[in-house]
Image 1 (cartoon, rainbow, N blue to C red):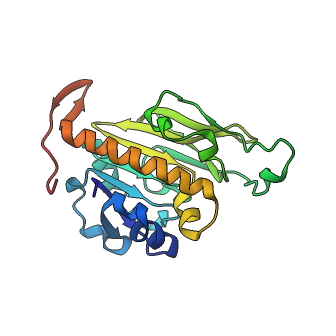
Image 2: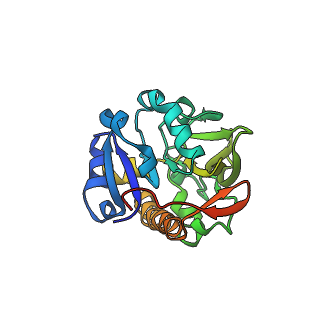
Length: 228
């Protein structure tokens, strides 16, 4: 078990990833989307929004999700969720998806790692990020952002962003590995999750073990969240 909780949208690929197989061991708690209004976010070290969760339904929780991040939570938002609907100052642009790029001569989707020194890329390579690109992100000035990976094709832009707000953190991506892994196709998506989820679990565990909250750049003691 880890400190990672996830919203369960109840779709087949959510079930196969979050509840079945070895990847399920990375999740401490699963919250059905329909019961999210009952969840006390303050008790959750890390909340993951899986691929293709209905962003329009999450819009009702926009204020709570923003408060969660600002007060020290770690929110992870996967692709095809429309984060612009449920997070402030987040833009999303849909782009034409090239499903057949791998059949082209010298095939190159155009995904590029922008921050090779970020610890996530001790576990992932560019090949582990390359299957499809559905859109790009644009976070506004209220966030302190680092672009971890981008799409360099036509209409390119950030596709993985590590962002800070208040004492919390949000990692957003337009990639949709849970959908593909849970649907049983695209081996790169399984490799992505096999690297990403252990990194996320270690990151959350390190944060809990240190019990540190960064407030205006200063390290100050932080109480361990309830239930951990």
